[in-house]
Length: 186
Image (tube, rainbow, N blue to C red):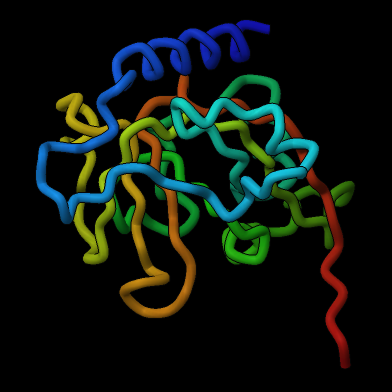
């Protein structure tokens, strides 16, 4: 598909650009490599990933209709933040944890998807990561070419989850759609 070809081209470009350049800007305290908690050795999906460009599988929560639209037509940056806001800038928000993605998931609008929630499991190329703790618009850190993604480290800041923000649709490929019902214990 065109989306996969665009993704693979972007992955190769980031890998080429970052080859041998994962030491950051020389600051020994700067950490620029993101190791996703979804990249567990021996995991059938993780074994397919290219660690040289920090490729990872991450979750994106949304509703069933949007999930199917994204899987068919790709992400659209111009609608970034319509669901929950843009804490770290107007980008594509992804999570290592499906429970974090579930916070952004909604049930469907149509009768067909009423009570059905959705998320995507996306293949992503993260490259050189800019780690931040405070909310703010960090898009320029990526668009300048200094970094390839932003990691909103809410885990470190407030004890919740890390969020990954990409500002290029070519860095994310919606590989799997997950539709589910929430089962709440009474």
